[in-house]
Image (tube, rainbow, N blue to C red; front, side, top):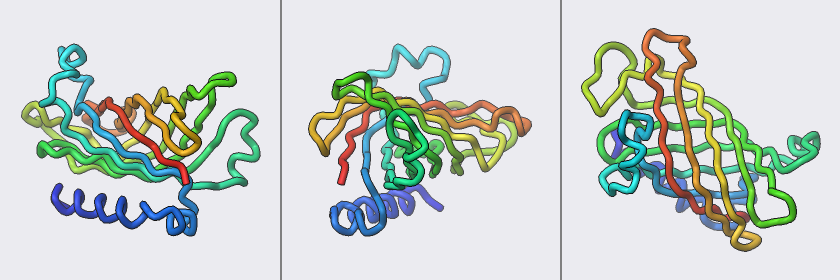
Length: 188
């Protein structure tokens, strides 16, 4: 699947689920979107994060309302999610799914969140890959993310997010991929 096709699919999903009534019919509790700097784990790139050329990823994520899943969590909210991080510069993109655990910090609008699941990517799997692309080793990867956010209103939030995908050394190559950026969320 080409990047342009993936972008059109993601935009269609965003438009389709932007209507609150329709989103709630599908059990969607929140939609998130934002921009990420690509491949921040490369040597020397962390200080280069403010360079606009590094911001190549668009992220979209849907979180689902599952009261039965949250019932056994004593702190915060546990929700399944699906999402995509699409690279606009011809590098690795991924589609992912898993579970997100959102925990408010004390009695404040600040929250932290961790997420874990799996991902499928568009990058190379085996052999030498010219920089800045990378060989990720397997088509299926583990996907983890962490966010620090602020609930701006009952519906709106903003969060700084870092995501990582790798194969945990289950395949020959395991360069992994780490992206970091900012997202906005809207709860229905």
